[in-house]
Image 1 (cartoon, rainbow, N blue to C red):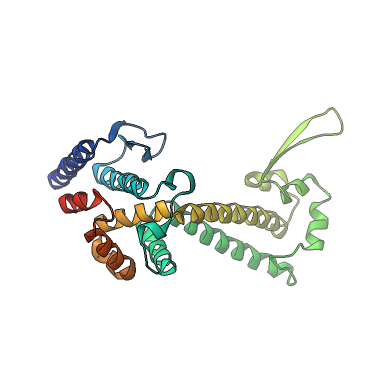
Image 2: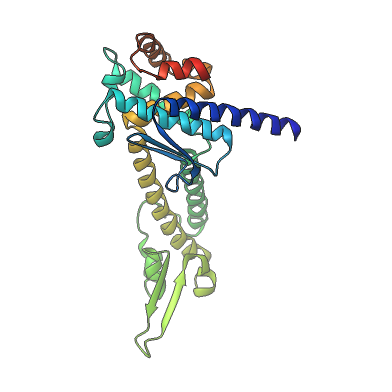
Length: 277
């Protein structure tokens, strides 16, 4: 416990020194904020860092947001179109750089959003496979990717037909306007007359919808990660976290970066790195 407290204190000292450095450049740095509901953000001449994260993470977020600032000084299109890699890494193979920076991004983002989504997608796929195997024991011709007419015929005789498209529904009765609620999570109680195969078929449809939602979120995340300004910011995060690992997975990018850094391409970023990295 004492050792952990000492490490946290060291992070706190480093973080405060970094903040002082940024303040000396004329930046506004807010550290007593929720940072617009996120861990941090940069806007024009202002950086906000969430007060609700550990100091180690505050350092990483500060580096990330400061890199956005540095990028904006090099490329005026950062605020409108997320900038360009060509201005950050001139006269270089941008395809190689983008591919390497995506690998770095996944390194930085491990145990975070992307990995959580990937794990959830794999988990859901495995659950679908298990349910499909059970259905095949009763319906050998069942295929996950196609509607099964015999099963759906039974389902469509009841209100369970709505669960083929929705996870939760409210159905108003034709008599007395009584409203009934049905859910994937209560399917055993709602439709006890169904065999396990029919119930599993309905659940598979639900999980397939979940897969589509996960895929859409992963696509949005990938599009976000591919923004040049985000790739560069996570590259700087990764350099601080594990420089050696970055040189292994992004050797070309690291080499170009070091050359440009020595040529003063990145302005005050060089002083920041010399002082804190």
